[in-house]
Amino acid sequence: MASSGAAAGLGLLSAAAWGGADFAGGVGARRSSALLVTVSGQIVSLLTLLAICLALRLTIPGSAYLAYAAIGGFEGALALAAFYRALAMGAMGLTAALTGLLTALVPVVFQIFHESLPTPLTAVGLAAGCVAIWLVTHSPAPGDAATPAKALLLGAAAGAGFGAQLILFKMASPGGVLWALTSARIAGVAALLLVIAIVPPPRPWQGFWLIGTLSGTLDTLGNLFYILTARFGRLDVAAVICSLYPAGTILLAALLLHERPTRRQMAGMALALATVGLLSL
Image 1: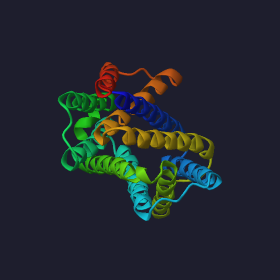
Image 2: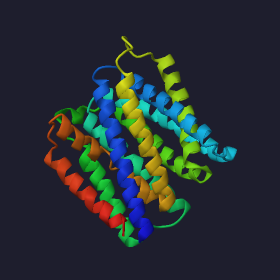
Image 3: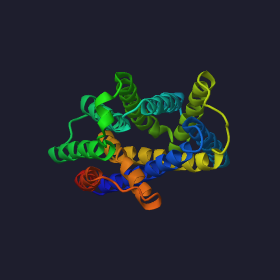
Image 4: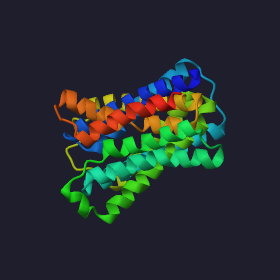
């Protein structure tokens, strides 16, 4: 019970941090390229993590743990680039909902096939969490009917990539949380710089470092809390709770930008709270 409650609490902290990171990144993307905002934040957080690891003289973990984290960081960054591209192609609501749902479902399926089935109560909580993610992220719009198939494919690929990243971070966590984060950041920065080199964002390249640093810091905290959540309990529970982060983005938009959530999103957030309660038992 205690470990489940701790995992739920850490999962909420992760969701809150990721939601804040997306909000900051979204605000920054209105002024500059979303990729530049993201890579600047990752570079700053990478330098900070390296400084902490070296200052504390943390033991470098085995190569397998570093490899899991690096692969997760690299493919997760590519998934992020695919997600941004999918959103730019239209019908953001359906694309974001599909991506968010697959982000949670991929670790759930992995957990079931590779470890064990959840208890009936946990299974109800996982199902409720998936429904909550869909309600929060999917805002129906007339354009949804004309969503390009390529956008949906990219959104699905991004969701699968994000879900795989959660699995790989879980596998890397026994080697040490901070070194796992550092290894993931090194690979993530390399992947984003590769994307920028292949498809350069439009100029001017300015005005993104400050908001990028804020977004990157919050994203790193979200990763930290997620890894701790996964270490406390089941991977599927950690993935579903942490994947509720869009609710945090919506709440920040409502508080700071006065963007009112829809009734559908409010119902999803209420269900998200019930989900956390169920999964903490």
